[in-house]
Picture 1 (cartoon, rainbow, N blue to C red):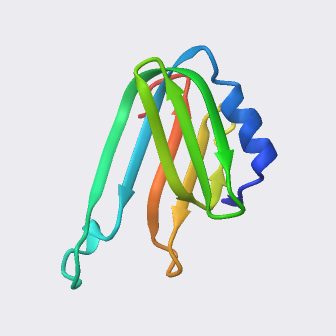
Picture 2: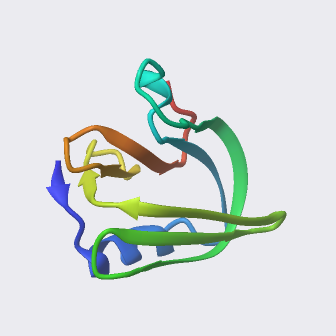
Length: 113
């Protein structure tokens, strides 16, 4: 994984404009470690099809991404890293100070396996 380059990620987001694409969105504030004290929460969406109209990455790190679809908005905050699969898939993640994943936002032309 590499640090997010905001200009590069913006170009990748733009490549999905006016397309039907698949989204994977996941977040957790510790749901995988429910034995810890405190409140935990999580959310998970995989292979939902969206028609992306526009999108923007902002911030100085951690970053925020807002995606406008035909049916509404998708918003992800706390993104810190990017991965590459060589297939044109947008793979963004956010990790806490202990290196644990807290958020993932992914876009693809094809369903996720």
